[in-house]
Image (tube, rainbow, N blue to C red; front, side, top):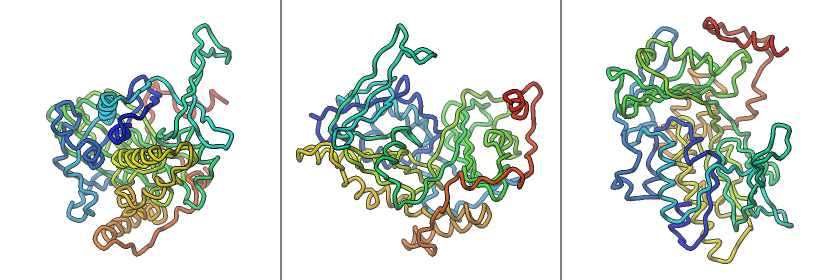
Length: 434
């Protein structure tokens, strides 16, 4: 939205925000690569209101075993994994700050309105969206505060709902945007924000780990990001192509925090908030066709997350800018509601494509060979891609969906998760519902 107004201030640009305010539904703990913000707002560092207060000062990579840990030397890590020059931030605050910049340029932002329906013309092209009706009673009937949804029509519509957004899924199916692409892969990321004791706080520390409590055939890992004001964001990611149906990502997260290398950070601290979100993990070979008649997919609706870096916000910004520039040109040439194919044709040759292509084999190698061998081969592949621009593996396929990876419970043993007293367990819940 900002870039559209920068290119053509006379355009009318509307942003629908399903949260009560911009940033309300942004959950990620984030280390942000500023490449996108640098290009969008080159003078942002001179703005005292910016939210990028904590620059990365120390970068740790740990392999966890059941009782100990090994720190991997940074010199062995591919250069693209280096976090120095990046910022530890609240991504919600970044979005709120960007919203003020957008409104200063004249962008209309409507918080509290979710787009619930795609609108089409007689030729089948997208011409806008409709918001959901409000004030519906539990029985499905309109109540006393019923308000009919709004139809918002535009020359082009950009879908940026995040991972597996409902409208994005409909558009991918209607226009067959996944054709000739690999299946999209997913993870679940669980996050907590803690206020820790001052002696446990190390502003600017970024710590990633993999290994325990996940088995060597289950992909995933963790992060600890030390922000300002004694705040630490802790997160745990589980790749959703795991095989054992007895595995519960939330329980694995809780076990992770008891590890000797981790638990000391939180002793005497206080958990302030928590949540979870889906993550796109398919990468370069799973990105659907972005453009369709009347608009395009951007951000995590397109799947622009760099899995080994655990970063996607920089590519989300860059994809928004790319789409804005292409659409501004199309409108200037008198076009509307056609397919902006330039967006699809341009992203692989952009900084987004360069970022994702270097890591395209990390996920399939991890999935095929497990943590020990897969991570090592993925690291080698990132090195050759970074230094020489090629891969020994070419471009690997994911092959099957995450759901197809799950195996029958009979093939696996139940995981003995600790059960605190007084907590309703999954088994007891199941018996209640049955």
